[in-house]
Image (cartoon, rainbow, N blue to C red):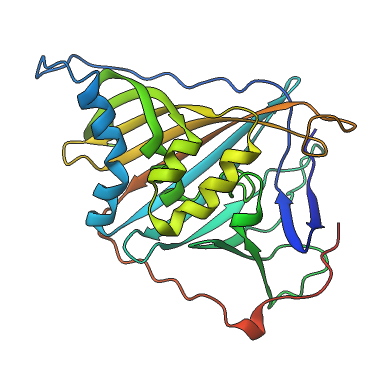
Length: 285
């Protein structure tokens, strides 16, 4: 069952787009022969993955598509997003579409999300928020650092999270939307990533390191020949309910979040809302 909740805790808004119990199936990959015959596992693989965030910053910008997959019982839901991100300015914009409700009715108009260091801005948030107003969330106060909360993983955070990569294996070469990419699989440690992250991403990742039920996050990362992150899939695990696993309905939740980057260098224009356009009233449940 899809659950949408909006709460204020300690003065901070916590948005849980969708909570589900159960495991999320991982996607496979068609791997072609390794033309170079070079062993890219071990230290070389770890280094390539950890450096991907810096490579993106050097690239400048890219268009992005996101998906967040969740399942409970025999029901599977997916939240999709599309937009762009400026990795130098560290700001981006996504149009996020929530899934239909069980009756087949559209769940919500697309939510416009603006991503900035330490902040998530949302428009078309829903009940109780005027149509011309934005909701602002301090991501450093969220227990997941906004890796899951907004229904899409911030593309920069998805890359910064790889700074804690370990136990990385080079799977092989494959084709991704016409580009030759190298597929790496491993796990990343959230706390380690937070310590190594850029100052703008450090606060949110530090919050996530405290909020998830597991310190490590399995991932599949796809880098092109320039070392740019083309696609990354993270498998998160956290505890639902009251946040400590002891409340009614508490339990382990698994979420698979995928970020796809393309059209590198495409201009991305993001205008953050003025203070007068931020909604400061009560958020309806």
